[in-house]
Image (cartoon, helix red, strand yellow):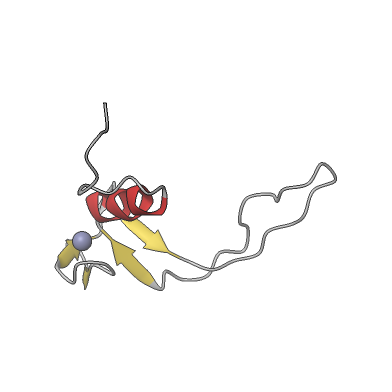
Amino acid sequence: MDIPQETCYFCGEPIVMVKGAYRKVTGWAQIREQGGTNSLSLMSEPEAWAHPACVDRQRLKKRGMGPHTEPLF
Ligand SMILES: [Zn+2]
């Protein structure tokens, strides 16, 4: 069986689409009464793929806790 190969959205390295890989999609989410949104439904085909490690890195960056930030205590 052939596993289709793509390149990672963040680092450009080849990525094998197996369990654990991230895929970037767009879709529709419905606004709920309590505020917030329901999770995506009607997802599109994946637009991009990314390694789990690369997505983690982006997430840390967004929280301002990048790998270059030293703890101050
Ligand atoms: Zn990557």
